[in-house]
Length: 99
Image (tube, rainbow, N blue to C red; front, side, top):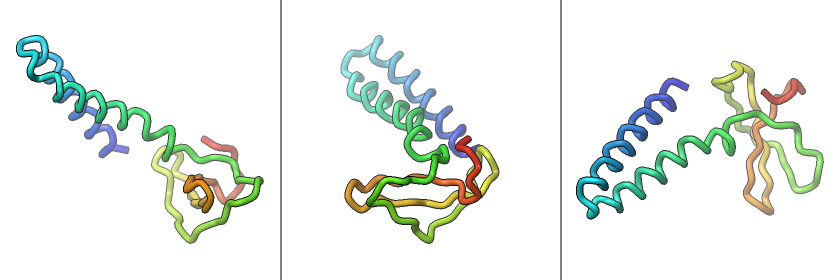
């Protein structure tokens, strides 16, 4: 969680510097686009990879051996994988509702 915050602050500083640079010199706009992309990825990565979800009930999912402790909730999480789509879900093995 602390590393994510640090990277987010660095990305925000990069974005701010690129925005100021683009105002001063329009040739800096590719840097602004890259900084915007990096910032958006950091902001939205938690939605895709972070929060634990309900155990998948539809077909195609299999439980993997991968386990870790969720930083936000402090609870253990099991990774489920869908071979057909490549999607991963992070599930609380104790059946607690998603955080």
